[in-house]
Length: 92
Image (cartoon, rainbow, N blue to C red; front, side, top):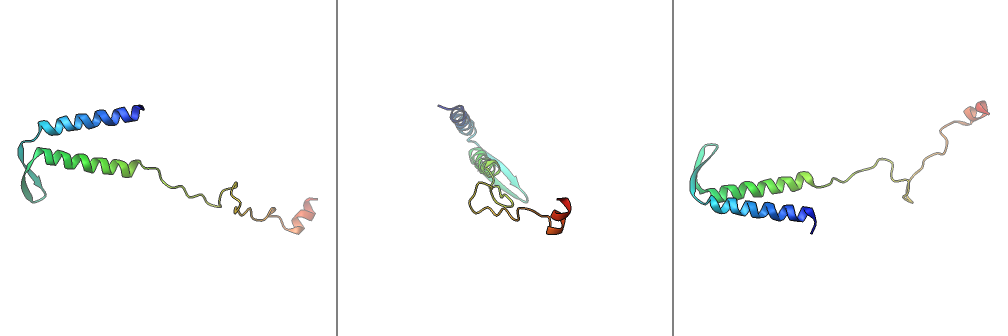
């Protein structure tokens, strides 16, 4: 197994133990409302939101390259020289 898989399994086991030990009911205040909820639900909700945010932030982004890829057949190289004919004559 890869180290990443082992770490994910350990975090899942740790989260499960923490959730199961905190199953009592507590008052939870959110803005102007007060709810009587299980700590289990609050911790589970926070864990799920944290996971979703971690996935969204940690995923690789699509990179857009300006001008295309030189190895691509559709790559527009543009004019081979930016010099005018008069400039070419002057240089030579």
